Length: 261
Image (tube, rainbow, N blue to C red):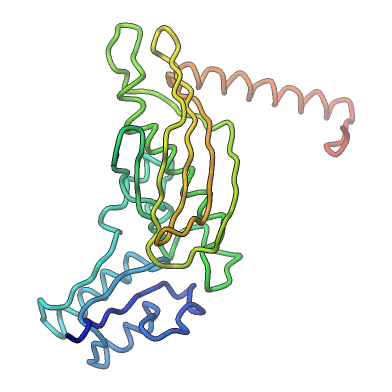
């Protein structure tokens, strides 16, 4: 039986990964489609594609070929909401919505948008840079804290779940183990410890976040952080900001250079 032909589509930033047959950039595929050529009927969207370009590709495929037999597999439609990973722009979101696969273990897929800030520099065009894996791990930790840990562990003083919490990451340890490439990547978070104060208003949690590509380990990131009532954290942040500002004013008034220690 003849195997179905599959094409992998990556963003233009990963053009050096397209040295093998069956891997093309979004721009290359768009040119083929506009010429009336469809190289395959099954496409798997890798990393670095622009969401807007993918939508345009779909429109072109539907308009030119009008075929229901053409299948596009992608993760953009499952991308988590930007506010749950503390971002303001959706194209800077790097993960899909986490799913709890078993108690204390959560899984997402990596989704690199071609317009994300981490693709703006330092890229070979072949492998996924480490800064993206670090940021994806931070987003995974933040998302699990926002969605699952707050609901499970944090309560207000009247023993009702509180809807206004802030999460602070205070420690990260990173190790890289192998290059990962602009294809599918799994992000897996395993909770290591969760501790809650007696009133149930503050927790600290540690977790291990690993990135895998077909069972190949790319990175390990250990994150530790806290969840606080928003009012408490904002008050603490405000006091520290005021102290920092006063120190600078005092330093300038005495002629202390910024470079002096």
